Image 1 (cartoon, one colour):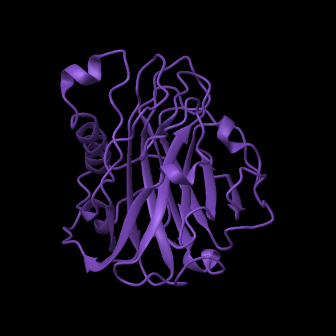
Image 2 (cartoon, one colour; image 1 turned 90 degrees about the vertical axis):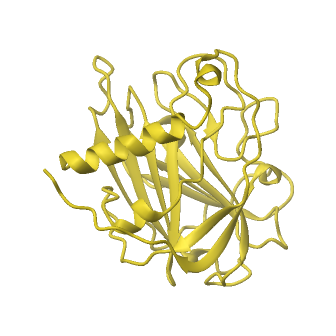
Image 3 (tube, rainbow, N blue to C red; image 1 turned 120 degrees about the vertical axis):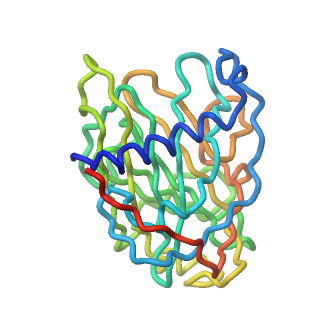
Length: 268
């Protein structure tokens, strides 16, 4: 997909701003920095319609705040490739976007409920009822837009109920680089998704969130063939990589407010 020059510049600047938030000396160290649980993140209503096309060119995305740096609790070696993630919402959907720094973008799975985590992949894990914090959903989405979804109703780490489907989910991706070609250096890939609130209705406290509702939630990234890393918004506390730990989830708060937006002009 080709991007207007101005839009590509802005997307790359958003990615750089995330990595520059940490002190330069810390980012250059090979040892992993101390991981810190993030502050609760506010999800604002979108003031304009969101089209799921993998471009992120709606004013709402530029107005929405980033969740903050992803953290590398199980870092061993290689470059920490950062991720910029944002949320928006309206009466029907939870919208999520990811901009993923990636020098070697890889993905081959295209079928629903395939092992998409083996590809470059991002994930949304959420427990939408704070009274049931161990009942959570996982939606895992790869660079090709294929996804796996499951529901975990119990405290024990038993197999996910993969017969649950996030009905109506929309996912689109775009790549700045070349897919499945390690002979060159890529820049980033983007994933944009709309997840219907109705998919969580049998667990969520409210089918459509009310203002000030709190969900427990985590965002994860993994996969790929070269420089594969595990990173998260809210860092894991297990000794080995394990994303299925709702006790490690962060918190998001739904706001009925919208953020001021500016028109994004195409200066192609």
